[in-house]
Amino acid sequence: MFILVPIAFAAGVITAVTPCILPVLPIVLAGGSSGTKRRPYAIAAGLVTTFTAFLLAGAWLWGLIGISEKHQLKIGAGLLLVLALILIVPRLGELVERPFRFLTRRRAGDLGGGFLLGASLGLVFVPCGGPVLAALTANAATNVVGGWAVAVAVSYAIGAALPMLAIARGSRRLTSNLRAHARTIQIAGGVLMAFGALVIYNGWAESLQTKVPSYASWAQNLIEGNSKANDALARLRHDKGKRRFVAHGQSLASVKLKDYGQAPDLQGISAWVNSQPLDLRSLRGKVVLVDFWTYSCINCLRTLPYLESWDGLYRSKGLVIIGVHTPEFGFEHDLGNVRAAVRRLKVRYPVALDNDYGTWQAYSNNYWPADYLIDQTGHIRELHFGEGGYAETERHIRLLLEAGKSGPLPREANQPDRTPGELRTPETYLGYLRIRSYAGSPLRPDRTATYQFPPGLAQDAFAYAGIWRVEGERILAGEGARLRLHFSARSVHLVLTGRGSVGVKLNGKAEQRIPITGDRLYTLVSQPRASSGLLELRFTPGLSAYAFTFG
Image 1 (cartoon, one colour):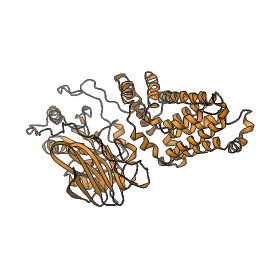
Image 2 (cartoon, helix red, strand yellow):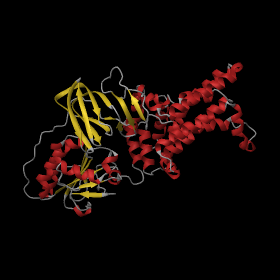
Image 3 (cartoon, helix red, strand yellow):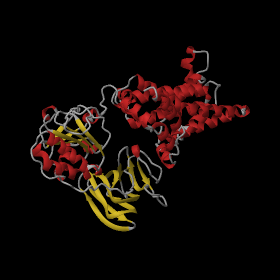
Image 4 (cartoon, helix red, strand yellow):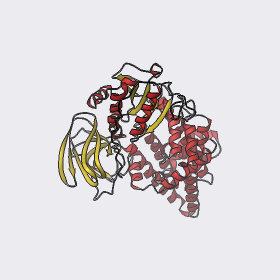
């Protein structure tokens, strides 16, 4: 586990020189240009302190005082604006310092002001995180924060702060050579800091970051993506009893399959469809296939025909398939939506609603779809993530059923594997929390705004036009709402909610108008072979779009 400390430090250094530093760069430059030699160090100390605190306990701390996620950056930006005004108007700084003069003989603006500036930066600095930051965030989200998590978080924060310390010291060294213009530089620094705070407050930072390519991703992969780092991160993520599946000796000697140990039971299930509540203990003696899915996931939908075929062939022989429906988007939590999807998709095996991610976390799962094949003694004998490998999974099902003396088995389904093999556009999220390859007007998060298409779109890029409200996980259409996407695929699908219609234009030619009657995945384009195309969509006001997927 100790290896994660230097890895986290290096990862912090790298993330601090990615495009994510751009919104806070002017603030660091301005903050370091005034005060004594100690001020840059106070800025770095403040950043490390608050960034670490909120990385490890942010959700809990904000929850205590009832501050929503979208207001947290605004609070940090507001503090930065106050500090900018203090630089511009020294009299204001004296008023702020007056209540604290009894605490020290030094001016508060020296170390205290620098620490407060760094602390404010710690609230607004959201680095382009790799696996280390993802593991820390996941641990904090599930209230799993041990000693190693603290050490790794502090190391990461120090690594991220050092480049900013260098920038702050450099700016101070530069301005110290211009002492005759110190007051002018201080005012200019305050104006620059105020502009940076305004950028962060209005959400323009996200747009700025999407415009600049991630030139450091190769370095992140080199440091955080190697096998030693992955092993250590797996141990960190699975502290405090979280399950990590490791193969060991077989439990059914006649079956030549790996044994990954006892399967966790189904936990935190809020409702069942097609079944009364089930648990794995009551299913001992059966072969169980636990399939994590969600009804708007195209990869999951392409897997369903194979699951339904196995259910029809082997249910009477002792196979139980349980579809654990763990939602990705808000509307997928709705029991009525899931029931309607199960009927529409003709799913006949039991479906468990894992709305609070209880079973997902018990299995330490990270994928849709993901399949865990469990033998008659309750041990996991196969793990499969994503699409494909259907023939092999069916063979393993049959091996376990034969070992359990289930009697003569029907012939194998032998369904062809229809997993797309061509290079295609990756899954594309439209809300600002996971947005990538956006190329349009500057984003205005959580506000209704007018957007315009750019003159052209690069491969896999998209843009908005007309009136839209861009939220964390979705976009909400207003008057004249349109969207363009330069894709490469055989088929294009879009997750939509609401009631209305979407007009589809492909390569400048009007194709169809699709009625939107429910909250689900809709197919917009279906071609005989994969090709590149320019898709333009026109939305009825009130419709919401979440993510494109491709086949």
